[in-house]
Length: 225
Image (cartoon, one colour):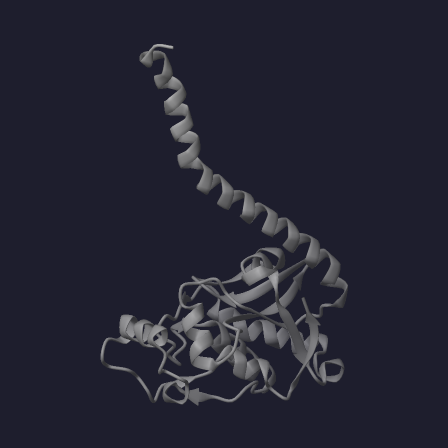
């Protein structure tokens, strides 16, 4: 075969090879989301409004959070029902309500844990749930807080949960800490801190971590998937 006749075949082969990683990633995301949809359809009868949900995020900062807090939990949100659908009220960019299946699919391996107030049967009345939702409403649409500050102008995930429950129900879930209380020794943590703060670390800043809420004695585990 003449060389010029081979060129179209070589060009098509090159395009296919170049496109394969991108197509493969799309296929994996599609399969992951399908699995998440199947999982959420299975668990929804066990969920209640106001449940908390935790997973290992795949975000760029997730590993640093895990190392600093000695925990796999790097992201969390509040589960609410909207009509027939379940959503997660979460602080990403921006603070928003995310379909539950989308939220599950974003976590590592689709694994997540849900928790609930130990006295939810007595406490989470319709009126209390309305107060809980109302407490979070002013934060809806706020930017994500990359610097983990305690002001309300920007919000991060565990801060959102803590403030919503404290303001809506007067419940303080987890122990407030300062940045200095975490393990900042790992190079991955130090690199992320340097990226965010330079040399001016706000070591006295009030912080609430996902694992601190996760370990709150006010909560019980409901699902572990």
